[in-house]
Length: 85
Image 1 (tube, rainbow, N blue to C red):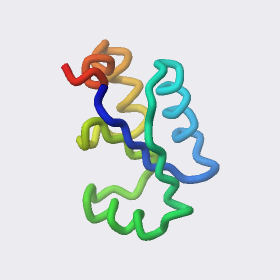
Image 2 (tube, one colour; image 1 turned 120 degrees about the vertical axis):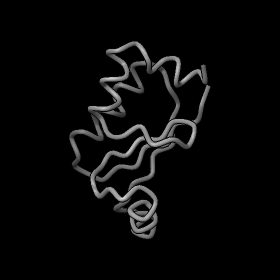
Image 3 (cartoon, helix red, strand yellow; image 1 turned 30 degrees about the vertical axis):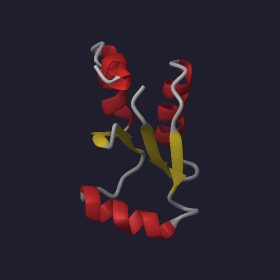
Image 4 (cartoon, rainbow, N blue to C red; image 1 turned 135 degrees about the horizontal axis):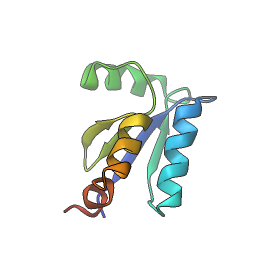
């Protein structure tokens, strides 16, 4: 199983939805709350050029936010990405 990292902020409905989708699929993930780690926010902006959350990485590759995650799942591509196929 590829490592999943999700960058979030408090009170973010898309963050909650992304975490719920991963939990429904029984996927373990590392959550990094950017409000608790502001230094991570600066690094993330430099790394991706994005300011929105969630930002979801699978195997260190940015896949995007919740709508991107949901689209991959609907297209049947998410499970393969998570498995490393």
